[in-house]
Image 1 (cartoon, rainbow, N blue to C red):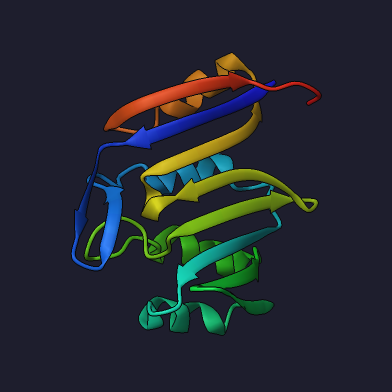
Image 2: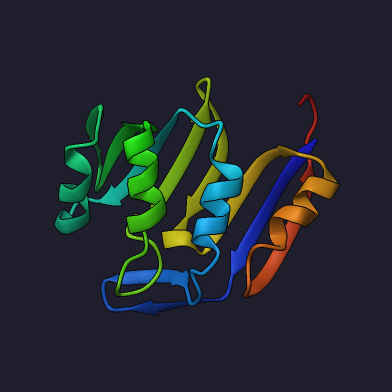
Length: 149
């Protein structure tokens, strides 16, 4: 077992660094890879008030860690629908800097840099190859064998 790291073709705008040019992968990623996860831990920059406001009513906890707000959200059916349909930012990329998806308290997938870097944990090489196929504009994809999984 190992991890696959996918880096998508990215760009940036003022106030938002490194986000994917093409987010057409989002619904497929959500539909195919998040069903087993019970919660998502989202890291946002503290100054991103609009996106933090969106999350507050869904949060089971909000903590401040330095310049980041850390928001934990249970993945109820309502929250799943929200994230599937309303995560893409009209300015580009996803609305949140980093999303950590967990199953039974163990991190299974990480989506970073507003969606431009995606890591899927605990997969074999065949699963990793299938995973990379949903991304239209990849600049890099690496599979890393891990010990002890």
